Length: 616
Image (cartoon, rainbow, N blue to C red; front, side, top):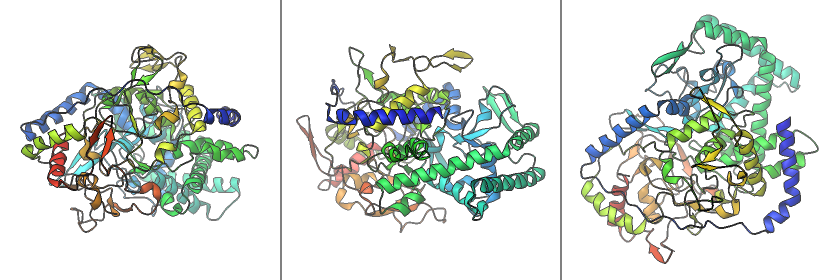
């Protein structure tokens, strides 16, 4: 209730001052020019360089193992999310809607990570019991982890996988996950519309199936999983733990089931409101969701919408809490965040020379991580996830290209890259580019209301007085940034949205693994990016095989997956304006110099640049 009241007050105040905000000047511009271009040297021997990069990743993860574990496996909250018992019961209640017996979440693109074969559920899902100080007394909640979107994989020639820690899970469909939950509930309601009766039916169905499942397999929910810290077992999710969790859930089953169902219904209704506002004529596709993509700003803002829409006297305000433009984008890689980190100006009142996400308007990495957690709409977030994510991602190396490289050709590409690409795609370049012809919808999604509300939510979750216990010590994770106190700097948590109506040119570490290209994933390979006249209108997306020649994941529908099974989905860039393949397709002039972006008349140069970028 307090959160709803806070949101209502914020919106009312913003309506009063919106005219002043929108008419006013957009604040001080970013005061410093980008740093000098930096160009990575092409290695003389790719297999040696490849192994060195792989070893570097291993050593880095070993040195930051706790942070890596939190990034991959820890839930976003200890006291909110989906009751874990309910999550594991979904395929029992509606097996026709969910995936395989081994992994029911493969239906929404979450996979079992072969590197942790004993894990209790698909990679990308965490359980609050991992971090809760006391093992019993509360039910376990589950939520997605950072790894759901940012641990992906690519299939090698031998059929095995290279895992992309900090990369992109192009298989994950968060919208479909929510839709399938609603479909599961609808099946159980069986036409019942009375709220109390339908939630009672859901509870009864849960309990009846729960007893049957647990009787046949006393380790069904937790698989006897062991949580380890420095190779020491600190908690065992054995049959005793499972039995006590089930007893706790049963004691409040109607309350838990009702709260879960109400929230999932509200989430989908809020998402449908977003689709109605910004995706007219594209309803069916947006409701099905796109693996590897999301309108993350919209998914986040529907949490405010839900609180406003439920009250008749604030319902008219609800749509104002949603973005004004379509914001569907590909997931981003998050490795090597140190190359995107903003820095203080001389007077410590502005953050410059950095940009993390597509347009860089959340300049501090810790808050970028936190805002991703808030996307799930949790009433209480675990700030430690954001802090450990910051620690891990600052220097986590990009996964090296796992195939062969023509070094002689790559060295030719290095010179062309230096002349035409490096000035923009360099570390700590905070410049916002507005003239590349790319769809600007995503750059416009954050308006005055979302900007103000976002800062308020970030500050409420982590501010200069916030204390959390990490590694046994009380710390204030949001008291300062880069050695400078954040006291009185609340406005910097999200920068002035009018300064960021464009896109950052990010460093290209691991760019081979970030296909398809452009913010909306509308260009399947690097070749198609550099030779824009050959960009296909439709192509296959979310496949795991790799096109080593054109540098991108397997995209041609005529080329079947090496597994012989159907994989990926057809992506049509002409279906909706926000998906168009236009942009980064004509030479541009920046700061008095012309940069070649269209290589149609020099395909040999394009092939050289492609080969060089495989080494980044």
